[in-house]
Length: 128
Image (cartoon, rainbow, N blue to C red; front, side):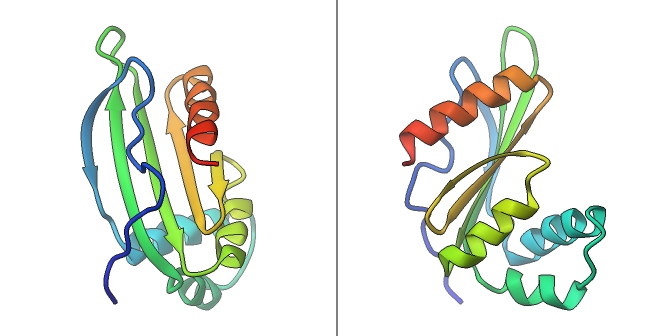
């Protein structure tokens, strides 16, 4: 399977943060993240998660640091083959800040909740 390109800027840096690293993790990384989330929610189905993860088309994990405070934010953007799978993944990631648009989902995490929410708002405006 060839890697697709995310339609919206996957590495849209949060204001005031410097990029530290970015990489493609792939379907196995998606499977690990999704399986852990489902397990934490008490949902069975390693097989179902593996099946769903095969709908992966592209991803990018990007890490940023605020040079003045050292605070770190990370965003993992995913593109799926279908909007239905993307919506299911977004629901399962509800413990995190999630920005969804069609078949693309971004999971945002960081040390400072306010910074994550500001980034999610900016990401939502940039990736309608």
